[in-house]
Length: 118
Image (cartoon, rainbow, N blue to C red; front, side, top):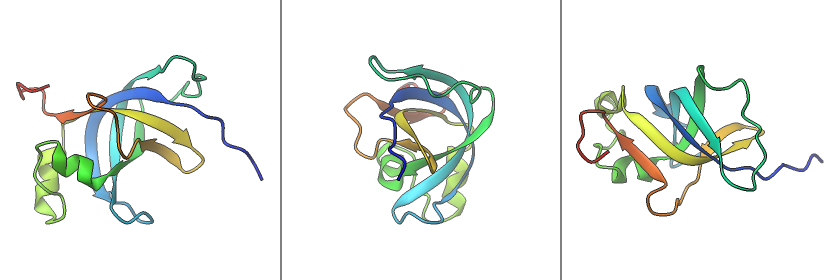
């Protein structure tokens, strides 16, 4: 069995697409134009080559709904998320990038640039 390397970084990017996660109930899968990655203190840098590319990022659906954006469960509402800026503390896992499901206050944000609460 391969042991995972502990890692955590703050990532930011623009939401290009969104769908329900195909394997994780209660999670969404965002396609994100990954713009920046900042490994948090004491964590290894495992992210080289990922910025500037579209990456899939798993986000707990409740975070999307709690961020002030309307629920994505109805389908068309997901369009409200397109173009939004996502910022979260994320782990790079064997299955891809996952935002922390219960982030510390202030470590998750999702807003359109014109939103004054960014």
